[in-house]
Length: 159
Image 1 (cartoon, rainbow, N blue to C red):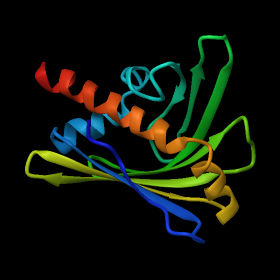
Image 2 (image 1 turned 135 degrees about the vertical axis):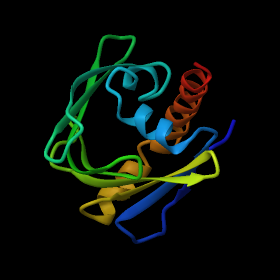
Image 3 (image 1 turned 180 degrees about the vertical axis):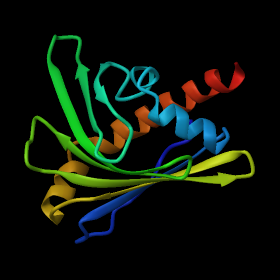
């Protein structure tokens, strides 16, 4: 299993996650932005995901809800600011369980001769917010999410 590369320098308000996928950039971008495919990869395996809203355009809203086996729901939402297919997405991210802690994400998709380097730069309002996210177990969840994403890419690419 390929893991994400997480770079989080002490005292900074951001972190960067990178991972290479064995699929063309166009397919990676499409899979990342297709509301029908989000439930198949977004979040850890023990959760299911519902796409409540996903309007992939500048000013468009997105909202996903994770459901755990005990019946609890966890909402996440944001606003798309820039969409440049198949190169870049910029959007906000907010976990509804901790409101008013909004981060800004820029996801870059770089072509590597048929593979894709995905770079996710996440900027927080404060170092404390960033450290809170890092200490929440997000690295483990991100690894599992990106593993699910890679598995889905293989299925979609084989079609």
